Each structure stands twice: as structure tokens, then as C-alpha cells.
Image 1: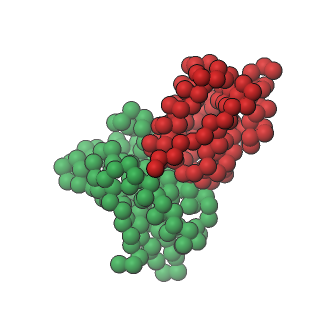
Image 2: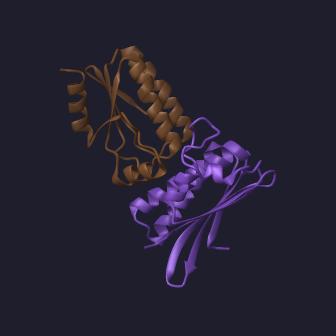
Image 3: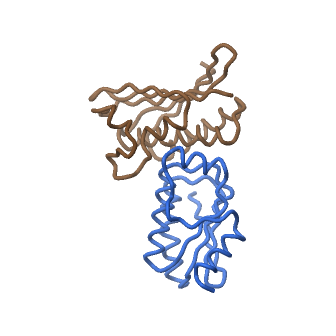
Length: 120
Length: 133
């Protein structure tokens, strides 16, 4: 009954759109799935789109921050896109800055940013 | 009491159930999307604290009315180990779980009122309120 977050390949990048509220297990499973997918496809970049997410608690933020650092260790850059105003406000009030994370307003700008970062 | 609904926190799934309940009540009361996110996040943090530190407990969501004001109160209760030094846990950056959980100061900032009562050995009782503006 557990649902996995689909990870799509687009050229040398991976695209992830998180469409529903994450529970702890789904978030941890995603972490593992994404790293395996990076390994499998030799992707250099990942865009994680959070447009549909209406809240992020400290646990989800930690899982996201961790997976970004883990991807970096493997050699892939991650851009987070589509963070909603309510999510940005609550994350900062909660005391979570997600510093040093690449972000963009939407998927399109995220892909552009990723291409710039990858120097293409 | 019809103005109060509770979720027992025993496993991780109960954290999801508690925040869904809170979000629904916040919507019913007419809170905007930002306050809904604040309330949902606060519930998630408090429910997770119970799950991580006390093992089990309960999160109740109450609709409260004071004069002309309506609000939502989160009551998080457990009978876990309690908190030794309340002043210390209310300091930003204090954590006993290695960074998991933004801690109680974050929850306090998300809500309008925050009351904590805890004694070592008898558990913790937290009431956090958000008023409708």
C-alpha cells in the first residue's frame, strides 16, 4: 500500500515531482530510490519539484537536505523547485534555512539553473 | 466533546493522521493557507516529539472561542520521561536527537501561544494555540 515517488529520466537529468504529503517511510524510500537511480543512469543533475507540497516539517526537510548532500557526494547536483509561499514561511519560522541548496521558482527555471550549474 | 478530536500517537502513521486532522480543523475554522501550514507543521513536530521521546501519547485538536475570537489549540500530552531542563529545550539549536526535529522553539514561533508543563518522570503537556485573525 506504500506508494513510491516516480523518478523520471530526461537526457542526463532526473526529474522528480512530489505530488502528495510525504510520510516518513515514503520520504526515506525516496532517498534510497533517488540515489540508486543516479547510480543507474549516471545522471549529473536532479530537479525535485515541490509545487504540490503544502507543508514541510523538520523531518521531511532533513530527508531532503540529506538526499541533496548524498547526491552531491555521488557527483549529481540537485535543484529544488516550486516551494510554495506557505512552505517558505513555515520553514524559516521553524528555523530551517536549507542553506546552500539550489532553488528555482518553477520546474522550467529549475532545469535552466541546472544546465547553468552543469556548465552546458 | 464535539469541539475536540484526538489522535493517539503510537507509530509514524499516527503523525500523519494527527496533522491531517489538524489541517481539516484549521480549514473548517477558516484559517488561510499560511496558517494552515503553520498549524500542520506544529502538529507534526509535536507528534514526532511524542513518538521519538515518549514512545506514545496523544495529540488533541480543539476549536476554542474567546469572546469574539476563534482559534485552534493543539494539546500534546505524553507520560514519557519528561524534560529535565525546560529552559534548555526552549533554546534554539538545542537537540538531543542529533538534529532531527527543529525543536520546541520552532513550534513556539509558528503558533501564537505556547505553554509547556513537564516534569521528569511524569511526562510532558504542551498547549499551543493559533488565533484566527
